[in-house]
Amino acid sequence: MGLVLVNESELTTKSYPRVLVVSHNVLSPSTNMGKTMLDFFAGWNQNQIAQLYFHNEVPTADVCKSYYRMTDFDMLESIFKFTSPGAMFDQSKIDSKQMGMREDTEVQASFYQIGARRKPYVYFFRNRLWRIKRWKTKKLMSWVAECNPEVVFYAAGDYVFSMKIALDISQERSIPLVVYFGDDFYFLENTVKLSLFEQSNKKDFRKQFEKLFAHLSTFTAATDKLAEKYGGYFDKAGYAILSSTEIQQKIEKRNEVVKISYIGNVNLNRWRSLIDIGRCLKEQGLVLDVYSIEKDPEILSELTLENGVSFQGSLPPEKVKDMIRKSTIVIHVEALDERSKQSTKYSLSTKIGDSLGSGVCLFAYGPADVASIAYLLENEVAYVCTKKKKLQEQLVKILNDADLRQHYLNNALELAAVRHDLKINADLFYEMICSVT
Image (tube, rainbow, N blue to C red; front, side, top):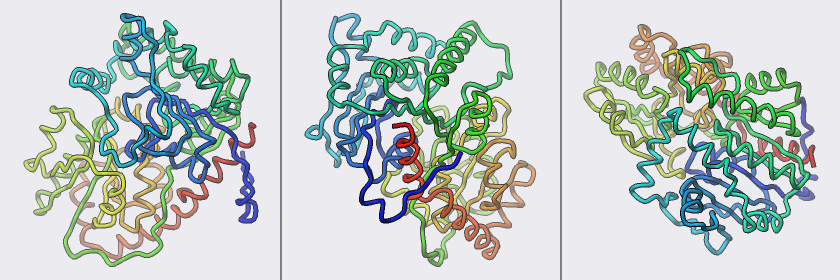
């Protein structure tokens, strides 16, 4: 389904609808989902945006008129201490210079670490905690009424409770619901026999997901294939808006020092693919620099110089693009095992847009039948390896052939200008929201 882009003369007369964002992460450049949402709203007036979110983060970006945070620990405390859950953050409480977004105690951080491993029992008990509906307080609903949204924009995940909340607010206020899907959870195939927890979770999720799709006005997805899959199955019009970036117009001469970088999440067994690359590089006397927020000690114990990997920790958001541009090549990986492939089949990393628009050659390693690798192959915008036995050979070739690197980065810049440009994608999102209001 196409969208009509506004021309330059219309930009000054844009009328921005009031939007309530409902999501797990706060709008922020520091997390993948936070940055994706932030890019959607590029150019918006902060007085038109409010956000309800469920993670233990504090807002550091003054892009919203007001934020309302409600966490699992707020919910538990409300049950045992009979308190009203949640906290509101207005402009006076937002510190854009604050270094960290997290407010976890040591105990809370441990629980979130368990949750990050995405165990079936965590989904089961978390969804039932929120089912009690202690979240629907007079304080929250008064805040929603004061924000007076004209549309609810929900960033979907794989938890049932947040879907119910977004749907409930949209229905109660009789306003449109627009949903962003960054991944495929509904069609996720199971390669092993499901436990009782998994069976219950899947049944609850599919039931609530179908209610969500029956009600939503339109949706956007992270890839073309995901938009086609959901749109075709549920007979609803949707749009693909890919990860956004500011395009590097001038390609500067690369540094003499060889630097190979990976920036992003290492979960879903991506760390195993990084080790494959690291070991190949080690044979060439090189090392793979990995920048990630990963804290899991079991994973970090493998990302070592012994495996050709130098783990550098997380990068501040404002330094990501600079680090990419300092690199000879940047790496994108997906896991090769079947279970991980099912989890990433339709997703497209937010870092791909930054890489394609950076003026640096992208090297990718992963299976050809997951969305991100297929996208890079189809458009010939990265040198891609899909077989472990070919990895050493292809790494040597791309590192030693400057003309080949130039070929791929030229293609990447052309594609980025069409599909990943920040302004173009923000205009697409604006038109989509306006189409339902």
